Image (cartoon, rainbow, N blue to C red; front, side, top):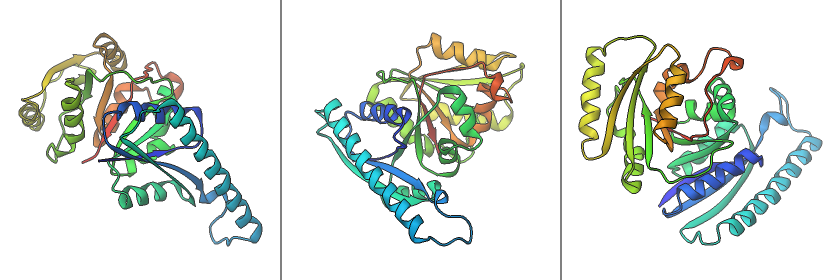
Length: 280
């Protein structure tokens, strides 16, 4: 039984993430928790107590959210009438967003969080502070990030960009291994640098450990050198028909450097491929 947390703000992006999650886990027995958080800081400031007026506003927002969550359940029932392996629960509360996510991850023993984001520019922004970025960097739970235009396709090819700095063992790769097993998918391990350089001793050791771990899977190693590294990634993803990109959370800085320039307006890489972020 998988436990999946689906935070939603009732936007098209979050609905797209819900659709993707239901397709992605269609063959799994799952409990899905649809969560809407009315941000507490919308209603209170530091050293500020609720007045009756603000309490009423908060209560009204809770009731509105409950109504919208019921509409999502109806929409799911119409779009996925044969989801017999899936159970759905709704959650809504006034809280700080991250605190709410952490609380439910712990209490519900959540296996995966699935969240939507606004394509590549959204990805760059959330790395530095939006809801999705806060979750993948500050909540220790496997997170599937679904770009706004991503549509589910069978998982046949998975890319794994890495700098071979897996310092705490490979147990964090278990969710990836499960995906490879269930889909008989191939894994493409990708190391990219902007100039020719060799791996250091620790990276070589970690590379060998990773190859041992992947011994029973279909995988290949790819080493790319390109001054425009983001172009190399985009080309690789397209030519290999990659369906999912996996990364380890501690490599996010490495990953961001690969995909993005320092300034949002200079982004030259765009993808509709979902990202699976793994935590140690």
